[in-house]
Length: 170
Image (tube, rainbow, N blue to C red; front, side, top):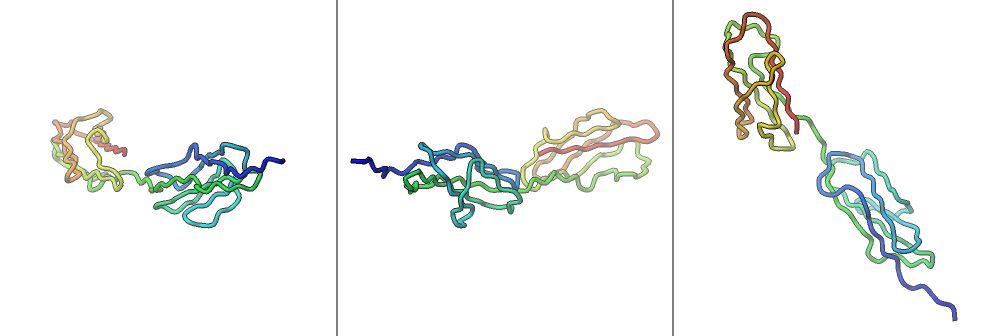
């Protein structure tokens, strides 16, 4: 008598985003434990024919769930599709707010206090995320992470133009 395949395939997602990612694109790779075709769905939509890798672009920022199931040559459908959930988050750069002395300003103080609010919408910045340069030289400063405030009492500067550069990375 002929052997009838009644065993469904097992679907496995081998790569793709998980947790929080700073991208509105996603690529998933998947396979099954036997030769199969695949169906995918995103965010509770309908299953549609797909292949590995499955690429999504221009996703909305927020929570997502990807599901994939295998269908073997005998028509057996994986009863437990593999799934992956993740959150797509926009990665906005840190902001430097209210720098003092103000950019382009002329001041008479040769020992100015250099200050700014350095804030990031997505992460808690720490002092090591920030670099302060005066006339191209890295300078030490105090950073109050609770108030997001950078502060440096300048040494005596020579008369003339000076450049202050504050860079923050998240």
